View 1 (spheres, rainbow, N blue to C red):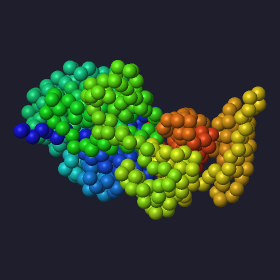
View 2: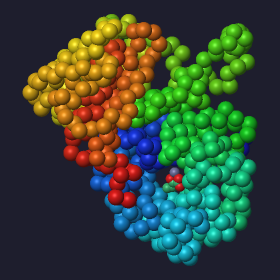
View 3: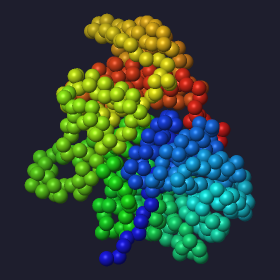
View 4: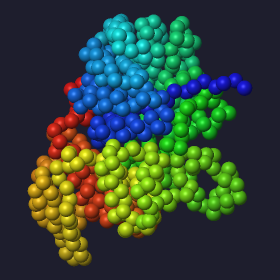
Length: 516
Ligand code: KIV
Ligand code: ZN
C-alpha cells in the first residue's frame, strides 16, 4: 500500500476567526482554545497578529508558551517591525512559524498599497529573509491571490521560495473563486513555478459565496498540502473554510483524496462548543458536522432505514466527531473524582485545585436542580468559572425579579462591587431588561449592549440556558457568558461576566480596532 501524503491542518480561529465582528477573545480564552486545538492534534495554530496591539502580542506569546504539540504561528505584514514583533512573541514556542503577507492583486497594489509590482516583489522577498532570522519555518501569502495575475503570482512565489519561504499560501481573500478555477490555479502554480517542489502549497479560502470549503478541497485535489481553516467556519465577513467540514470530507472520501490528516476528530464537538461559547457565535442547527441536527433523523423513512442499517442515511458516525452516543454523563450522586475524570475526558484542564473545587460546587448546585448532567452542561459550567477571582470585581449576590401579566417587570438585586455589597432595582420592558438596568444602576459601565442571545444547552424544560452578552465601550468589545437553569439568572451572570472584562485595564484592542 502506498503511504498517503500528510495534509497539514492550519487553524486560524484565533487570528482570522477573531476578525469576525464581535468575536473578540481574551488572552486566557485564546489559551483555552489553543489547548483544545492541540488536543485535537491540529498541526499549526495561528494565534494572532502580534503587532496589532500589546494585548495581541501577549496573547500570541501566552499561546506560544502554553502549546507543545502543535506549531504556533504569528501573522506579520511584510514590514520589519511586524516581523520582529512576531519573532519576539514566538520566542518561547516549542515550534514557531512566522506568516508574512503582502497583496499581489492589481486592485490591492494600486489602490491600497500604492506600490508597483516590482516594489511589492522586493518587499515580499525582504520580509521572508528577515523572518528567516527568527525561524526556519516561514510562510508567505500573496494576499488576494485569487484576483492576482498569474504571471506576477508565479514570479513572486518563485522569489519568496528562493528567499526561504517553506510554505506558500494562496488566499482567496475575498471569496471570489469557484472550485474548478481555484483547483486549476493551484495546479498551474505548481507546474509553472520552477522551485515549487521546495515549498508546501497551502490555501486560505473565504466564504463570501459559500464556496470556501469546496474551493479548499478542489485545491487539495490539485496538490495543496495545507489548508487554513477555522472552527465553525468563523472568520472575517462570511468566514473561512470550516475545519470540521474539511477534515471530515477528507476522512469520509478517502477514495478521492490521496492525503490524510492526523486529527483526532472525536475532539471536534468540544472545540466547536468551546469556540461558540467563548465568542457568542451560535452554531446553526443545520450546520454540517457540528450542528444540533447534523445527525438527527426526523422523517419516518429515514429513521426506519437508520434503525435497520445506519449506513442507509449516515455517511459518518456521530461519535467520530465527538457527539456522545450515551449522553447522560453525571448526576446528583457523582463524586469529585467522576467529575474530574469527565472533565479530563473532555480535554478541560482546570488551572488550579481551587478552580476545580469551585466548578465542582457549581456542579453540585446544578445537579440539585437538574437530574441529568450532560457534557454540554459541564462545558458551560467550566466557562462560568474561568474568570479568576482576582479579576472578578463585580459578583451577583442575589436577584429577585417580578414578571406578571399587566404589570411592568422589575428586578431587585444585590451585587458585591469591589468587595462592598450594594443594592439596586429597576423596571424594564421584560425581566432581563429590568435586570440589566438594575446592574447598570450600580456598575455604570458606560457600555452599549451589542448582542444578547440565549441558547438551551440541552433539551427539556429543565435545561440550562446559556446566555451570551456582548458589550462595547469606545470600540472595545467583550463577550460575557453565563449559564443557569433560570435564564434570568443566566442573563445576569453573562452581563456581569462581560462587565468584569470591560472593567479590566485594556488588555487588548480588538484586532480591527488596533493601530494596524
Ligand atoms: O484572507 C487573507 O488573505 C488573509 C491573509 C493574511 C492570509 O487572511
Ligand atoms: Zn483571511
